[in-house]
Image 1 (cartoon, helix red, strand yellow):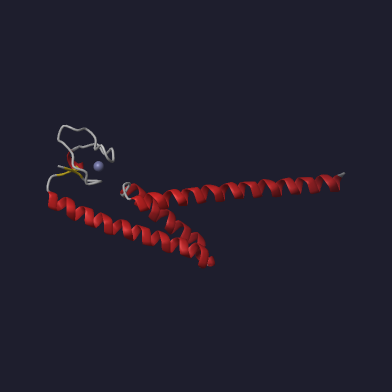
Image 2: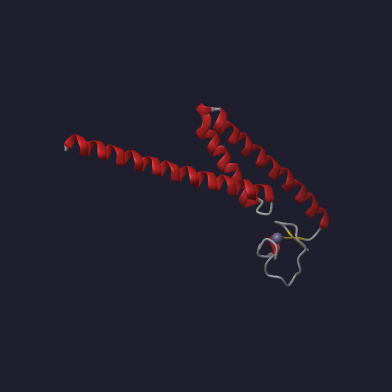
Length: 130
Ligand SMILES: [Zn+2]
C-alpha cells in the first residue's frame, strides 16, 4: 500500500502517513504500484507546470509593469496551489517560503513608508501651524 499524496509505502494499521501526515483512509491509499508510479509522474509534471507559471508570473512582475498586479496574482495562485497540492515538492516549498518572505518584507516596507509619510505630513503641519 502507498500513500496517495507522497507515495510513501504505508502499512494497513497506520492511521497517518509518517512522511506527509495524510490520514490513511481508503481514498488516500493507493494499492497498485503502477498507479502510484503513474500518479507520481503526473504530479511531478503538474508541479513543474506550477513552478513554470510561478516563475513566469515573477518575471512579469518585474518586466511587464502594466500587468504586475495580474502577474503577482498568477504567481500567488500557482505557488499556493502547488504548495497545497504537492507539499513534498522541495522546490515548491522553497519558492513558496521565499515568496512569502518577500511579500511580508514588502508589506513591512509599505507600512514603514506609510507611517514615515504620515509622520512627515504631521510634522509639516505642526510647523506651519506653529
Ligand atoms: Zn504520505
